[in-house]
Image 1: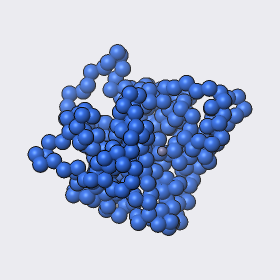
Image 2: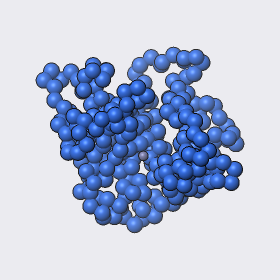
Image 3: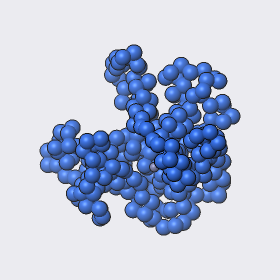
Image 4: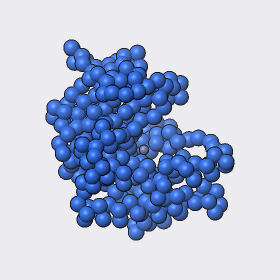
Length: 281
Ligand SMILES: [Zn+2]
């Protein structure tokens, strides 16, 4: 899988090994995967599609070619390690890495919101520090970085205002990279979802929910979980990811598309006022 129309972005099978570049997927009849984990190319084709959609979003909306705006597509490595329940972006190899999940709770983590989230790390507060060769070089203009910091500061303040329990606030500076990536990933995924509906009959409502409402419900369901207060306190102090309920309410309350989907009005709890609404990309 190599896309020569999008900077040769490519996708490889890691064969469940923890290092190296893996082996680029090939298929003689150009018919990839079977939609299930019984074919290793199924996860590959999802990751590949996600990378293409992310490329297109940043190109059409922001005029960027590739994560580092250098015309080079990223490598996506799938089937990383065994029972690995995560996905990640690396500024060093400029590549995406996807685990297969544990096979029960999680299947391969190759969906579009995951890919959009992880690639957005390529130019968050950390990604900004590494150039296209993975070297620790500040590659942004000072003006761009200043504006970027102003925008991310909005997210810092937003999360500072959330309380894990009364009086115990989230640490905005700690979680800013992850919450910026959540906002970026959701924005990419929503744009790609809308694009996928073009020229087709509109999908029916299900259980009274519109397609747009179900998109946001999908994100909320990822984070439906329980946590003991002790664990929440520990995470609040050490984890760069926001607590689950703030991963949902944080980015969605910044998105006008969410407000439109649920017909929320100015002043509703899930609509941040215009002067506090954060938009990065
Ligand atoms: Zn992340």
